[in-house]
Length: 142
Image 1 (cartoon, rainbow, N blue to C red):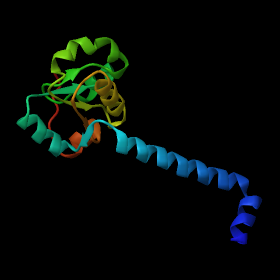
Image 2 (image 1 turned 120 degrees about the vertical axis):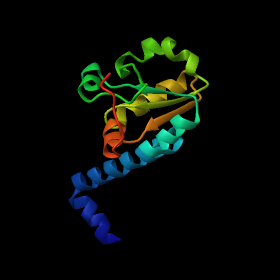
Image 3 (image 1 turned 60 degrees about the horizontal axis):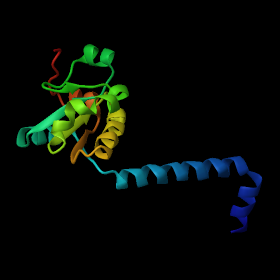
Image 4 (image 1 turned 90 degrees about the vertical axis):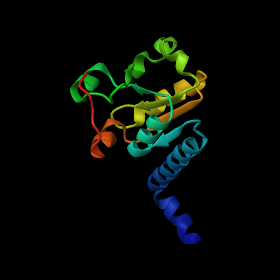
């Protein structure tokens, strides 16, 4: 035990960085466990799309959507405009809403926004469009 205390005393910066990393991991894990939406991989999301009357929401920026295309039938509302345009999708509050972006990070933020605004069944597409493409699933250029 004395060796640990000596190490901490001699290397406060390293110990501080270790504490910060542990704290960040704890925060991320806590956030994941308390999120009010599901995360699904592409194959699971396809099953959900086929089983439910669902809406697919693309929250990427305009240029990203034009460059790679979108999932067929997806509604495009950039994350930066989502709060202002919630009324456009309000009729889907009781349906399954599958949200995606490029990699799955921004869509998590969009999922939180949707849940806070009364959407009941929200799913984050794990891996986003990149995950979708890696599974060999098609994208539409329209």
